Image (tube, rainbow, N blue to C red; front, side, top):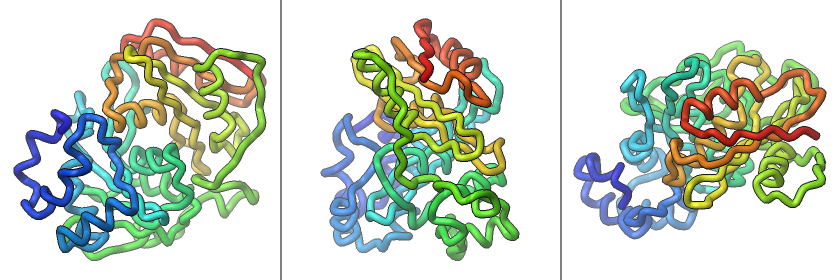
Length: 294
């Protein structure tokens, strides 16, 4: 079992502990449960979808990295596939607070990077802030996305974001979690550059067309990729580096163990991820940061 779970394991009901143990007892637990695993856990624990997601929140919050606020938030995203994806807030000392990742963003991006096509619900241990409500409105689930909190009746995103402004108010574009491939190419045999290019090709930037992807190589030789997730309201957009750091954290990696990082983006894009990416990686101790353009 990962060390991060040990402090809160005794708070998990015994029946749920027994049901979860076959899946999370290993250090390589991927911070997600497949639909089959979820069904097995529900049968053994007697919990339904909503109750299970609520019960898993302490485990999700154990992934939180909050050196500034010391405020630990967990989230569980349930895909239409039946898979459950963990998420947690992430803060980075030494860089502007705009580089922070919220728990809802983490769970949603985790699901997206794992190949989920649409979300049915998100469960979080604190009420979503306005930033997250707007971020969720970019999803192809729309305002019908179910939102669950402890000790509150289930609501939809429409309840949390009345008279919402979002992608449907603008041009007809792909929505977040829609499958896309922009078809950019680079003449390279470098595995890390190719991974970042693949991420850029699947990024979501329908408003600026400034597609971008990041790939990180850690000290163990593992590669983590992230895609840019743009928002109709612009400010809640999630940079590709943060997406890669989410995947790294959820996979049990350490953000201070990045050996090499690559950003791939358009040479003539309306905006660039380079300055924020390089500054954040420098603060995390990564000294080899490269930029490639298509």
